[in-house]
Image (tube, rainbow, N blue to C red):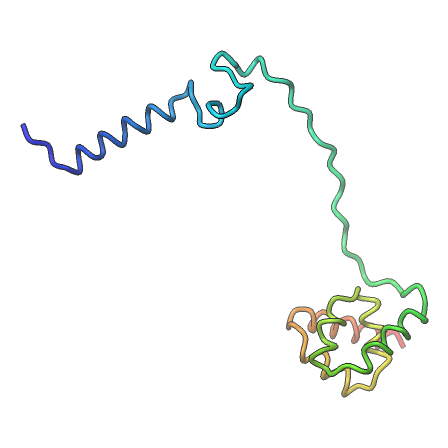
Length: 135
């Protein structure tokens, strides 16, 4: 009786995988010095759940703490080109970014928004419109 070569290879691989992956032996248990083949699930220490803290909830931007902070940020951005200022302004919190963009001429703010990633520029544009509606 002749077996095709793929069948022989499959048989050998299956036997090898069964020897290494049998329920009594796992790869992790073989390499840990503490693990013993007689270790049963009942002998393991109890699992203690970690405390779960609630995720922060996004809210509308609050007013910045100080106008001095906004003035300092605006001064730092003023000397940069729009392509250099865009990543910096994009990383600011919403209230800080809105304060900086509102403190500069419209054309400059537009250039900075155009150089930002689209999602961040769209969010800041929406917030700028909302901030302008409150005037």
